[in-house]
Amino acid sequence: MFDAIPDMAAKRAELSPDALAFRAERDWSFAEVDRAAGGIAAGLMAAGLGAGDRLAILCHNTVEFFLTLFACQKTGIILCPLNWRQPAPELLGTIAPVGIHAILHDATFAPLAAEVAAGADATCYSFDQDVRAWQGLTPLAPSGAVPADRPWYLLFTSGTTGQPKAVIQTARMAWANAVSVHHSVAMTDADRSVNFLPLFHTAGINLYTLPLFLAGGASTVLPKVDPEALLRLCRDGAVSQFFGVPAIYQSFSLSESVRDVDWRTIRCGCGGAPLSEPLIHFFADKGCKVLNGYGMTETGPMGTLMDAGGAEAKIGSVGKPQIMNEIRLAGVEGRSAGTGEIQFLGPNVTPGYFGNDTATRATFTEDGWLKTGDVGRRDGDGYLFVVDRIKDMFISGGENVYPAEVERILHTHPAILEAAVVGVPDAKWGETGAAFVILRPGETLDMDGLRPWCRERLAGYKVPALFRVVDDFPRTAAGKVRKPELKEMLADA
Image 1 (cartoon, one colour):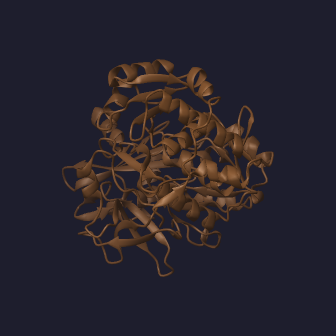
Image 2: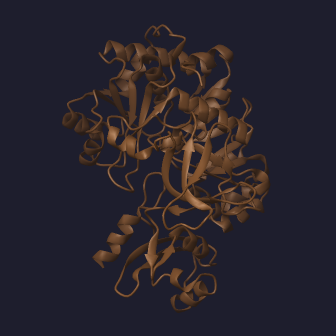
Image 3: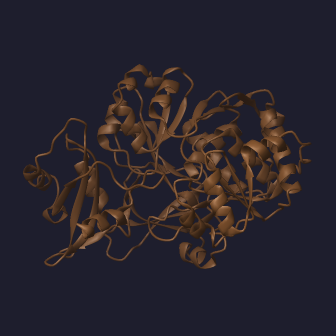
């Protein structure tokens, strides 16, 4: 791809200056976005920040986040969105390998930002006093283009498998992701979407807000997840493209308001975890085929996506690799033929981890493919099925057990809303499965009958030895289950 990428806010303002870009407390045109971003860029530089400096940001979802994101693209300042759910000591540990020069915050997170800034020897700036004043400055003169592979912003991995790493995001990755999104879901400037997923994760920025911005469409910005507000927007025709994680679709299915939405008018995507078969059928019955996808922060994130024709015919699949990337299944010791580690190659893939060459080298093969750590298989039609995380697999009595397979079966039980399975030590078999389940509202579970129910659908060595009903799982902000913490719950008990 190209060595230089157009300044995204400036180019979109040139093409459709008066069109609606964002809807929040007020409406923003593309020209207003670019002008404000240019002013913020001038303000940041006047404050002493320059290309390569790291600017942390702590905020709920807001248009000002995107204004700052575009300002950083104009200046070369590297934006570092921080997880506002984490306490200051944890955030300081996350940013220590990166180092920050300043931190920007909204009013809600002023105390947290001050504590982080003090620990990191950084300067604090606020949206209310600084960013809004900077918007009125004479905009920084546009450069016309930005280096395609220059670090633009850093996203910290969730830490479900260890210490978080700072994944470099570039303009090249953003354009490649946008091309894949535009192609896979037929996105145009007539589309409308809603921004609500946390902005310290890739989905909050890139599914679908940034691709829709580049297409010339508009996003309504909600401060944070609010299922009833989302359903009202869907009901009122403010959403034609929607992307959510399984927990969002689950909450929709349990709300009376889901009946008020004409789901035939909305094209829906899902990622972050597999969407269960009951939920796929639930929305299909309402005229909406939710398309499962697969990707990661390191792939920007669009990797694969299901097509509408296979949504019900290929349940369990995450579709095919999209237009800007390729996948291969690399042999993994102990796996059967036709399965292997999923690896990606394409312009959507990160160049690596900021300040962590060791992790970068460990994540890429010698010929440049990104290793995902996930086991997958492809069927005869080329559809990809994610079997499980390599690290989640456990061995019971000499047999490989993939928790995701057991979870998919448990999700079909009429009383079970969600399930999570982990491997735990066992004196006889080496390891056995422990299943944590969340029940559907108003349901009870016959624990004595659950094991034989599973045995009818699974090989004996795959049936969990232990079942536990819980109200919820420990999760990351992206909704992923923190399985190490489930194991700790058993150890504590």
